[in-house]
Image (cartoon, rainbow over all chains, first blue to last red; front, side):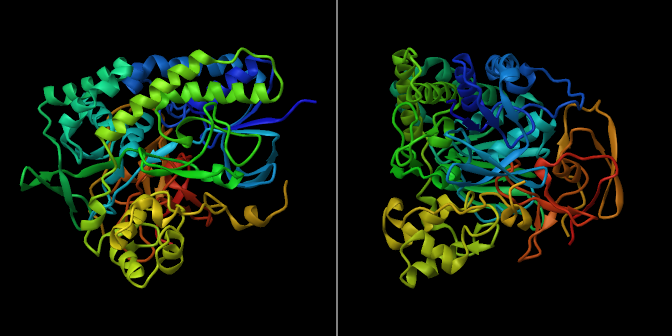
Length: 455
Length: 96
């Protein structure tokens, strides 16, 4: 009997998983929310719209990898049941419940590989809901997917490798970069160079992005404490405390993000067990080295959705998850000691990155009470602190009391900072206030799709 | 309301086919392959107003995650502006 294998996510992990399964005679279903493959990292321009830029223009140093992923997809797609435009919003037993063209669809599976990717991790600051403030990943998507800049004079604020990458892409595209501001220290990168030396190419690319910005005389402000984004109906500036003084950066847009958070709601709905990862400072689904989920048999997790390790590691993790599926189905395949070894190097590299450019948990304590944390429900830091002062010590209790994380985004944007603000008020570590539970539907759907019969 | 000046700036792919849509009853131009969010923010400084504060918003994540860019068409269909492409004759309303 043939097992039905379903992959969710057509980024680097999902495509590589599909490739390996197909090369071993399996015919998986590949589901993706987007209309074209590539995920966010290798997001392609809209199909058939006459876009002219080539891979070099779109992905710069990552062009070869983007091209290779598309070539692979073209090679395997005839043997693949590819379903773009399909948003999975619930998992019930062995069925995915999805929205397709506004209608409910159900897709059964025996083995499920989730390759759901990641999004920016946010620490709010006063003014961050103003028009003109976008996530760092969003700023990059505007440029590569839409050929647009998010403003005329853009400040980049955050931490992590995407900060300097996105800023350098803007600079190369001829857009004025007002400043690159980070809460980490540029020298911290050097201190972790030993850890990063396990992936010299990638470390060198990171340095080249910084060099691009320095060559264009972009102000690079390290060890900064962001104070506020200025403006009433649109962004007019950014205030940051650095080097002992408040500095005002004139800008009409801000790209904001402190590393990435795993998109793990579907893993949770599928039954994966979670643990707090101290290096990444987030709750992550537990897996073995191949990506087999702890807590549910037949569930496999690959790519950044199962902990942030980057796009190169995601390709490997996709292949390894496919190997696990094949092994579990009794296929006699050569297992991959070499791939597991390379993946271990990526893990060490990522730990060095996370230590050099951590999530700025410390900012949570000093956020003014009036700062909006939850942009869906307009919940402020002060409201979360008031809930803590009333004796609520668990993030889901605080959600019930304040509506933080209860809005349309399901806590994707506010969850990390909400937990930090709560923990700081209680004087506890962030893992001890618990984890926002995922609730279906994980994306907004029409009520008839939610309640309706399977079509 | 928010400043009338466009938030986004188009810097590439300007040779695509022109598409006519309306935004709150006013005709605007977009290019094939623009998302609704792109089309609006190339026209003005904000996308919609927040439900609870009447403060202007312009979306945030641009990748279908934050859900801060929902708008509607004149038929009453609601959709995410960052993941919906413009189509000829689309009639978008941002004040519902």
